[in-house]
Length: 159
Length: 264
Ligand SMILES: Cc1cc2nc3c(=O)[nH]c(=O)nc-3n(C[C@H](O)[C@H](O)[C@H](O)COP(=O)(O)OP(=O)(O)OC[C@H]3O[C@@H](n4cnc5c(N)ncnc54)[C@H](O)[C@@H]3O)c2cc1C
Ligand code: FES
Ligand code: FES
Image 1 (cartoon, protein in one colour):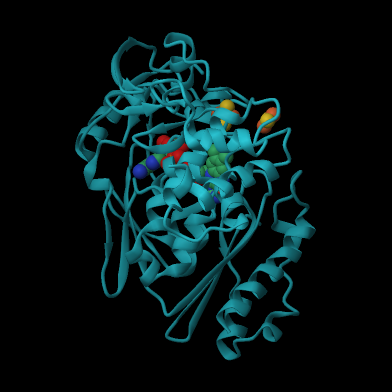
Image 2 (image 1 turned 90 degrees about the vertical axis):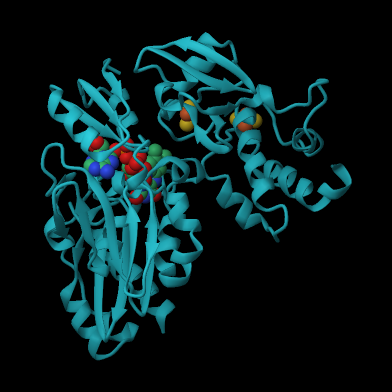
């Protein structure tokens, strides 16, 4: 079946099978391999992308379900000139990654966290609750939590 | 996944007529249960009928006596609705404890209720609050809706359209979550309305159930003391790699205790 969708602000028209997963469309057809497949069982969040600005697991949605909608992947996060988004900078500054496999998903979820808690008080418990859909097998999470809270505490200077 | 046809109707009547014209169709809501099932080749529908474009399934209405939630409302919408949080905070809390943010963004109350997973959270709220389930054909009392493990009173092709919860004075939901998935190993929903107390347990048995003995004792004297000696026999409870039936029996008392403490 033929579907159209906007990926990272670009209109794409593609032919997919009804059973094609969104993550497979992104990786295999559109070459956007920044979105990872960690588990393929809806648990790990390595495949997290934004669908109409909500974080979702792209391994658990059909490409057909995303037709005519807006997708943002990790490739759409950095600035046009290639400089990193401030949340990516914050991960770099706080050692928020080791092997980096979970990082694209972590960044996509973090973007929603910083948007949701921009004006609100946030503590470590809230950040950990918001990260429940993203697994990391390397860092032990502390440095990821630090990356997000560092951004939230100091974002006015960074923006 | 086996292949299937994909259809996206924009009304309930269109969805139903597509369903009856197909060999072996299945509705898809958030897909958070169905897609993993398809990936494991545990189901082989000829057609998937996506309910996400049917706007009549998406409203949230809060009236003086009850809250009515459309089947396609996501767990996130229910957890973040100010109107629900004011009228029935225990329901918002329950929704905010399901799975993780990505699951809450996609998963729907209609899908959860239609699926009748023994560890799902909403069934406890439905049974404790004495909810009504509205479908494309009829209205079903919750006592008649959940029949067994993954089994409900829904007929072939019948669509859950909305669920209405009578508003109560006080309610609390406490769960012992599976640390990996968030599903309830045991969850207890306790509600109080005009001195009537209803205790519903999910996660522990093949389907959600009430503990009338606890309800009676708590109605006479609302304290943790009045239920401390009540033991639900483990004979009919679930036993799996997450917890033995004996442990689930123990957890029932602990979870109801926590709910009572929150409301005293
Ligand atoms: C990682 C993970 C963690 C989870 N944790 C929890 C948890 O902690 N607690 C919990 O309760 N659940 C949990 N879930 C399940 C989640 O809540 C699902 O969203 C829900 O059970 C099914 O809803 P859905 O909208 O995704 O339905 P779908 O997967 O689309 O459908 C499920 C079934 O219901 C049928 N159906 C859907 N909508 C209707 C309708 N309106 N009328 C008739 N039939 C319909 C479908 O045909 C299908 O058979 C988890 C899921 C995942 C992947
Ligand atoms: S690959 Fe999608 S959740 Fe793990
Ligand atoms: S950095 Fe290796 S999995 Fe997170």
